[in-house]
Image 1: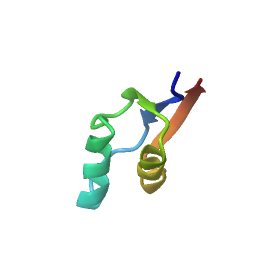
Image 2: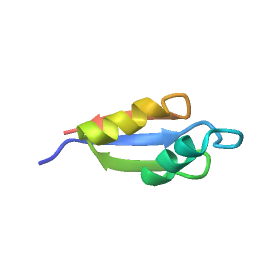
Image 3: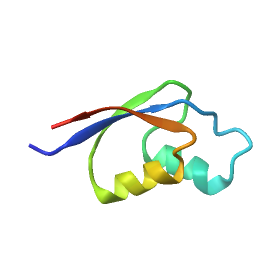
Image 4: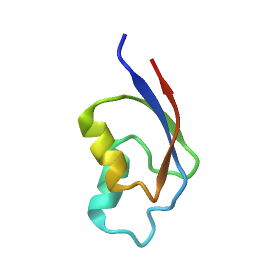
Length: 62
């Protein structure tokens, strides 16, 4: 079973650079307080690190 992480958006993409907005959309987040369960891969971790001021990791499964 693959490891997964639950990510929650806590910051607004308003007045942020276009690449940060695109990263949010790439993770499946685009509105406040939405959560997504994503596979724990290095690419997903890198995306989370890029926008760490707008998201938080709620829990890690697996």
